[in-house]
Amino acid sequence: MLEYLLSFLILTGATLTFIGSLGLLRLKDFYMRLHGPTKATTLGVGSLLIASALFFSSHNAGISLHEVLITVFLVITAPVSAHLLAKAALHLNLHSFAKMPAKSTKGEDGADDDAMDTQTPEEKSSSSDTHVPRKPV
Amino acid sequence: MLNSVIPIALGLVTAAVAMSFWRLLSGPSMPDRILALDTLYINAIALLMLLGIHLGSALFFEAALLIALMGFIGTVALCKYLLRGDIIE
Picture 1 (cartoon, chains in turn red, yellow):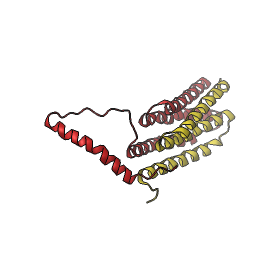
Picture 2: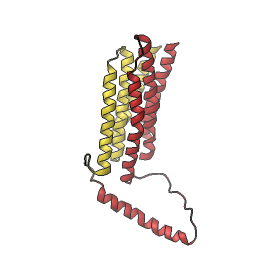
Picture 3: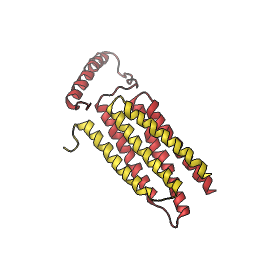
Picture 4: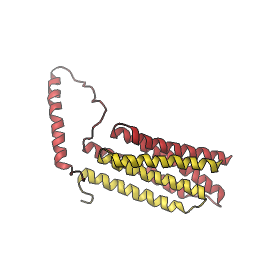
């Protein structure tokens, strides 16, 4: 019975890791690509670690707690690294396939919005040009 | 049952490593490459876990814990370099 549970957990974890890397390879956009590996981190490696903990707890004497340590560390650090990656991508002005949100204001405010829209990309690109280091080749 | 499942899982995770490595080589931007490195160390932890179950040895946990720690520190350092142009200000 435990063997079936272990096999299910191992297959689930390996499949989710595979799907995460497939998303990293196949999706079009950096912000879409960021979505895939975070699922692989939490669900895939999490279920593999649960399977490993069950296996070593059943085969050796006592409860095996190393995996809990790795799980806690991964669950704490995965959102932090994803947040930093998204911040870096926004700072570098990476191209996104997402549409701009629709304008809510109408009438004479629309002219101001258009003026703002024409100014902001230039400002953003110029500010990013001054702050961003040149990409190492 | 377990002996027939683990090679399949090892094959799946190895394919995941290959796809992440392809993204690391061909990523169009720097955050793509950092994300590929992040995924590569996650895949390395999964491979070590599977190998530990397969060989029945508990020696791989320390290596997996060290890889998790150093990988996170590397990701944070690279992202800080892209964000600020410097790592330690």
